Length: 312
View: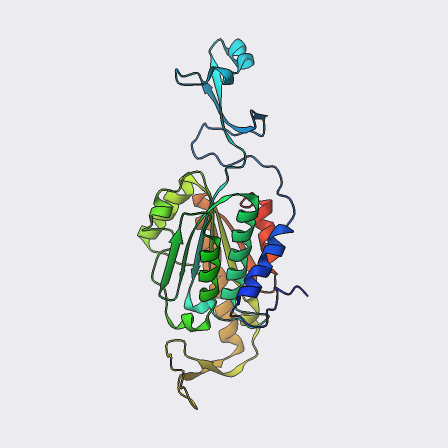
């Protein structure tokens, strides 16, 4: 079994976060793919020249480099055309991690929050190893951290370590991870990876999400614990995440929840119906959504992102 699948504790330490570097390095190679084009009519190609990647072929403009004139197309069309290039290794990535209080829960292996944090760590290490530019915004509990400095890996890992602390489930973040932020408002031509267990957003958040998807390639990763819907009927004692008291004794901060077979089945139907609506809405925005179970290892999820071109 992968040591990442069932960590000793859902609260991750420095050694575990350092171990993620090994898994990031051995994800494999990303497939060659046509990169994202933010504007209609713009096309990108795998054709290379001058150690660069061709972004666009268009009519010549006075400011264009004469060395990049495409003489073959010019001769065929009778109009001078030039090629625009970008550095092949100039991969811009934006990581958005948003954990609700409900994410600090799991019936098998670890917490949903822990799996998200492991995945975020692999993304961070992979970006560093590939020389990609990584900006990020992380929200959990009452904490929010953001940076557009790609060299700030140690700070991000420290924040991920803090995010894994169970105490954060007592505070629900009301921050919208993709709106009201300079990082997202100014994001253009980036691979944006959204990691969150949330399924709802406001109208203003939706408008911001649509704008983000118009100018970037957005990948939405959701992790669930499907075993939650298979719990046997009965009474369960659950710690109330709204009560924080390190001196809790007896029944303080604990509530009893009754679960029947019918109520569990209805909860499952409601969840997946809402999830299906969310998936359809995200697809209409041009956002790729993928759902994974907590039983799936973080390196497997990272390989999916690699196959989609979100990682390199």
